[in-house]
Amino acid sequence: MKFISVAIDGPVGAGKSTVARECAKRLGFIYCDTGALYRAVGLYCVRNGKKLEDPSEVAGCLDGINVGLSLVDGVQHVFLNGEDVSEEIRLPEMSMAASVVSAIPQVRGKLLSMQREAAEKNDVIMDGRDIGTVVLPNADVKIFLTAKPEIRAKRRYDELIKKGVETTFEDVLSDLNERDHNDSHRAVAPLKQADDAIFVDTSELDFGQSVELICGIVRERQNVL
Ligand code: DC
Image (cartoon, rainbow, N blue to C red; front, side):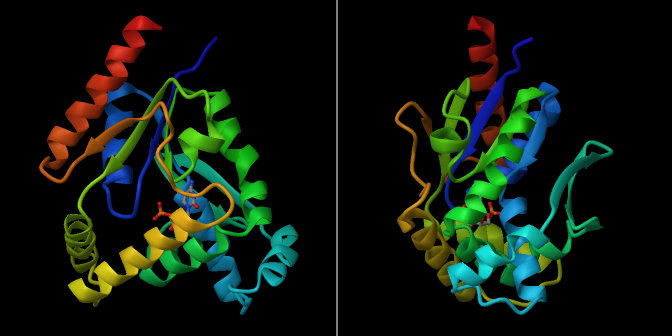
């Protein structure tokens, strides 16, 4: 049986995860948030005092890292050496740690097969930075989801404040710009739009409109498969 795969890539705060999660629910697909895997590796390195900026130190500790994804009541949970770290990986400092370790080729290599396996056994919506270009180059639908930086930063700021995280809009915007720069300028699998991806700018769209738009694109494609 052939499973359908939808790749959603884009910069920080474009709404990939919230939109993808809701689309997956409506379409009956599983949702795979690949950023969570890089965050778990970042968390391990921070907890164990590894120098993130030293690729050989990070690569050297990868054998001690076992990252797992599983669905609990339909929601993706992330396990680091058996511990559920789904909450801790969302801390703002883990965002930057994930971005730094994700530039290391050995880290990307370790996580690649896991992501591909998820798409082999399920209809999946997978989001990240290199899904349409590297992880699932033959995905049935590819979307490059973005919005203006100030709008993405405002959405991320509101989300963090709601969670009780103390921060400022300026800090969120500068963190977002720095991460986007790292993610799109690294040598291996940088963030970029796949040639055959559909460009979607959500600057003028609310959450419901973005979900409708993407579900519509997927359904249209399903009809011709
Ligand atoms: O999607 P996110 O913000 O949770 O991702 C955290 C970091 O992980 C992001 O800054 C870059 C990296 N990442 C990646 O390099 N490739 C992916 N497919 C997903 C995330």
